[in-house]
Image (cartoon, rainbow, N blue to C red; front, top):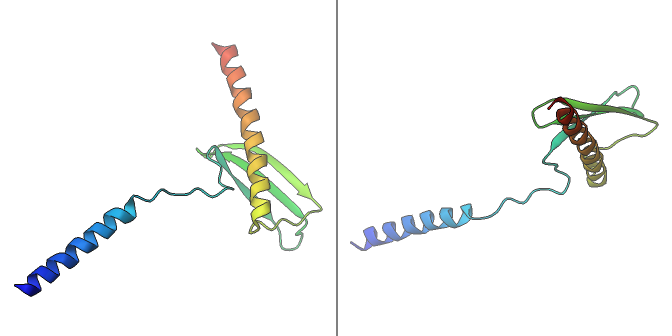
Length: 106
């Protein structure tokens, strides 16, 4: 009888801890943008030439920029935040352009 109580208590503790663990909110990293994403393309033979492509969340290419003379280390936090800021400005311009085009059609 005592063993059953211990097993029951252990099960309740496991269930309770999983329920409590699920209530944590997910923290979004400061370099993650909700409007779209960016992709950096570089070459091993020419590391100072980088192509940055900006996409919407649906995968539509919005803009492509070339950065010449700079080696981008996308593992660095500072670089990720700068790319996020570039993406946000590109997406804002894209949204304004499409709103004006939509207004002209209708």
